[in-house]
Picture 1 (cartoon, rainbow, N blue to C red):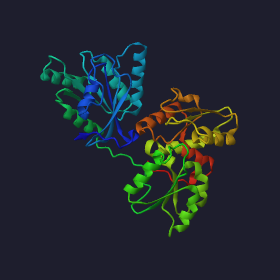
Picture 2: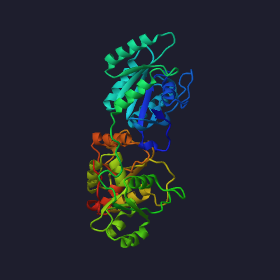
Picture 3: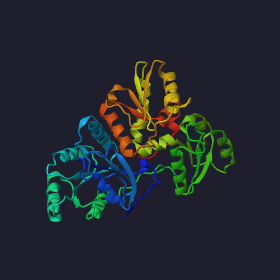
Length: 402
């Protein structure tokens, strides 16, 4: 069973990329799977100019996000940009569908190789063509399966013939993998958890930032006694409790002051550290913090934000972390900042990369950045971990389980 579902954040959905030639039927396939006109369909070549995203729910997978990409046979200057957008979508794909349409499948074969090189589970779809019988389409699907060593499903997006088979194959590819959760291994039912949340001036008035919302919801789902305070309220909250809280989760910017009053028996972590465990390789990110000791004034550091916002006066990535680094290393330390999907193609230009929590992107995308850093031999850490390290309290911080 499938249905439209929009309450889950895009970053926490299974990303399913749809790839193929121009007008192979990619948009029609998404419309048929969602059973709604979610994507624009046209006979004109190159109608899809950028990645179109459509959220939905698939029973057996959960919350999904379909990525409708431009044709990989597009031409011209604009076509090259469309193809690059499709290439970029690979970094966030958890599953992929290749749509076959023409007799020549060499281009599709190249993209299957790209997907397999990235360990992205991939299936094929053979779309029906005018004047071609269903039997012939089935024979073509069987031949493609043998040629490319992937499952290939014949379907007709207009009549919806074979659409359920496509959905079932996606479920099989997903394999019922258990979704990682923010507080895995950190709390048990009935635990008391204190969330220390400064009123972030970067968040819209009256709203919380996403990691705080995610943490509150999961604490409630796990039947924890959840107490939300500002840093100034923390001492009073602690003194009002009959016993120490099991866990204190703080905004990384006040790590040191919270650590000073954190009871010895209470575990301490931060929202950013929890996000590092959810989205990335927590051991690698924490071990990489030690690279700070090797930095010199002629070193280069990259700060990688995921969200794009107008920088505030006390911005954590653009002001606070750079100030802390330069205080330790020297004022001449070169620090570059990128935001959104901007990320250097050559990570080896840097001596250290510091990634934000990554709440705007899915795990696959953040892991693609980590793998790029590892391949270049560049240490990569995380906002919260770096702040804890520079504050001299990283050894006090409880890291999420891998």
